[in-house]
Amino acid sequence: MFGLYFGDYLLKKKKISHSLLEDVMEQQHTSRAKLGLIAVAEKLLTSKQADELNELQKLKDSRFGDIAIEKGYLKKEDVEYLLNLQGNPYIRFVQALTENNVMTMDQIETTLEEFKKDYGLSDAELDALKSGDIDRIIPVFVDTGIPFAGECIALAIRNIVRFVNNNIMLKESYIAKEYTFTSIAYQQLVGSHELFVAFAGEDEALLNIASPFAREEFESMDEDAFDSICEFINCSNGLYASKLSREDIHIDMTPPKYDQNKTLTSDGDLYVVPIIIDGKQSDLLVVVDHKVEIN
Amino acid sequence: MAKILIVDDSKTSRRILKNILEANGHTVIGEAINGKEAVDKFKELKPDITTMDITMPVMDGLEALKKIMGVDKDARVVMVTAAGQKTKMVDAVKHGAVEFLTKPFEEEQIIEIIERVINQ
Image (cartoon, each protein chain N blue to C red):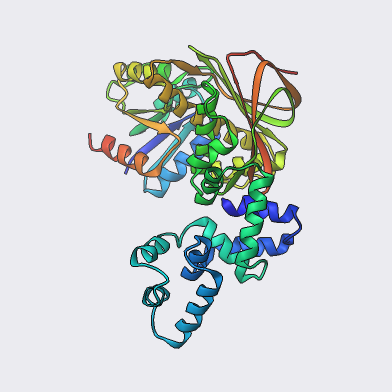
């Protein structure tokens, strides 16, 4: 996931072309990160030390880590730590950038600092993005502390990752009073609390949820494609309702519905969470204990 | 291997379930989109196992379960629920449901439960 966020930033800053970014994104899934590069990224070695070790490795029949220990640059536990990071999405993306000569490691470090500053990220938030762990990433973009809405949103996002696409990008969530949509699939939950949960967006974006969830390629947002998103919402809300029932809060799910080309209004806060799936933005919409109208 | 009737108003769910069952050697002999249709198809097709969604229009899964058990007290009906429908699960057990499948579907869980029902 880190590649989506940082890659998008590099595009905006014109530091990479679309086609080169595609190559980098592709490569990050196939290549295994090199230990030297991870060590530099983790600031355990300087670029110069890594280059020196790489040169030595060409002359010796030894592993990079062993040579680094022999030279006294790394300890055994450092090497073990670095080996554990080889599958890390951040490291793999960074390696793909350097191998495609997009940037050097030093330039990546500088750009990463700018990225952090421009997006107002703390060190912990940047680490969360680097980790690729959705549970750590969600709170960077969503206020998960909002009663009911926060948990409901977090669960829906986790279910997107689990059942639809594990490589998504979140954008900063916001509060609205109305929302105009091309297409929407939604469900209302009633009982101790009332919740309105929906996915809305352009048809192309919603197809990126409908097709993978149904495991079928839909050409357009027809009845079957809407049925797939409705069923996804139903399943996700079912898991949420189940969680609430363990806290003695009981809600029932009404049949999901869908609509097109209208405006949704709420007399309370409408939480909007933009989710980018395969480059297209769908919005997750949640309203808690307030009336929702679609006209 | 079992002859199975799938009852669900969601085409997506019917298709996912059908694909999983058929990939594991079972035969889906029919599908119904609501409880009323389920009762008619149960009488007509006499399936070994019926998978029954709970929330459906026209006639819900609980009502259909009661009617099917009235037709055949030995019918093996597996209720399909979104995870949150705990109260309805309890009702379904009272009325003769033999097992539960929870959505979203996971292949391993489905096959394990169907095998268990076959061996009952």
